[in-house]
Each structure stands twice: as structure tokens, then as C-alpha cells.
Image (cartoon, rainbow, N blue to C red; front, side):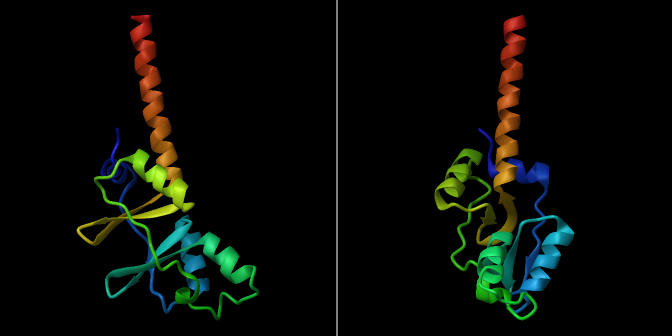
Length: 142
């Protein structure tokens, strides 16, 4: 069983953030520049929300709002579901599936230490399954 800390150790723990007063356009620009689908929203070193491409599509584009005039605070998700580095990959996969979310901030002692995506979890599970397959093939062949 693999834990989130192991996943962060291999993928890195850099987290891209934005402040709630910044414009949605700035958030989308950062996401595009960094190649990520979500940003944590930080105010005074505290996680206050998360903004994703999905938020942009549903709360700006579909509602006819302007990303140049809408602050991040207007569309961010405020009730952020988080996990810890000590949680298992499988448990986080269940959380994300049940909650229908694609990004999960990782906090350790109330400090943000990483952000994992559904894609990160899928890659980890596939790699773990491939390792089991390789071991079984090695065992069968002697």
C-alpha cells in the first residue's frame, strides 16, 4: 500500500497558489503557465479555498461573467476537503471519487504541504499494479 507522502516524494510537493482578491483571469493564466488544473487559494498563509478549471467553466463562462472582472473569491470552493501525507492512495481515491473532486490539498499539522490530482493517484495505482504483475510473471517463470 502506498501513502500520499511517497507520492509527494516522487512527484514533488510544490503547490501553486493565488490570493482570493486576485482576478479569475490571473488564476487561469497561472494554471496555463504551470500546466495545472487547480490552484490553492491562500490568504495570510492559510488555505481558504481552491479554484479549478471546472470552477471557471461552470461559474464564469456558463454564467456569462468576465474573468477580467471576477475575483477568485467569488468562484472558489470554500469548503476544501484535504488529506494528510499519512493517508493511503486508495483512501484518497475513494474520497475524490465520492466527493466528485479532482484535486486534494495535503496538509500536515495544519500546514499545506502538497496538492494531489486524480491523475496522480491513477498513475500511482497503475504503477503499483504493474509492479505486482511483474513480480507474478517473474515468480511464474522461475
